[in-house]
Image (cartoon, rainbow, N blue to C red; front, side, top):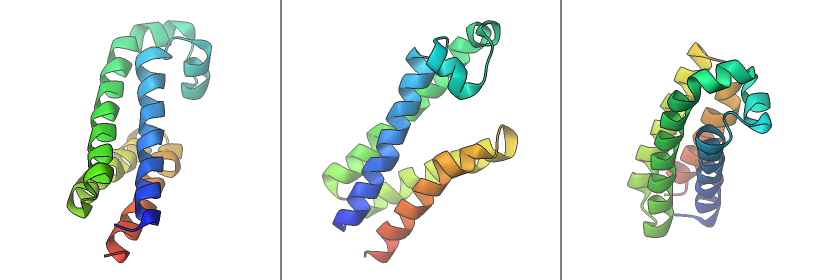
Length: 117
């Protein structure tokens, strides 16, 4: 894979690591509540669900790191596609911002992975 593809995959992985931290550890804290626009009561009531979401983001990070270390375009394609599907679904069901924060960086990274072959 090209250096640009590896860098873009790493950016997507770092974004998902940030989401993991927000969802698993900062959900009820001021930063987590601000990012997700929640009251303290709603954050407390949903913290277990958020931690579960964070765990899934961790699996995405692991797969993207695997793709970088092994320099495997097929692995990168699979995990970037997972990120894209999650981002599109989140944009359709939760908030359109999710498309720009989650799906769009993965789409760009996937395009570079494919065109760099």
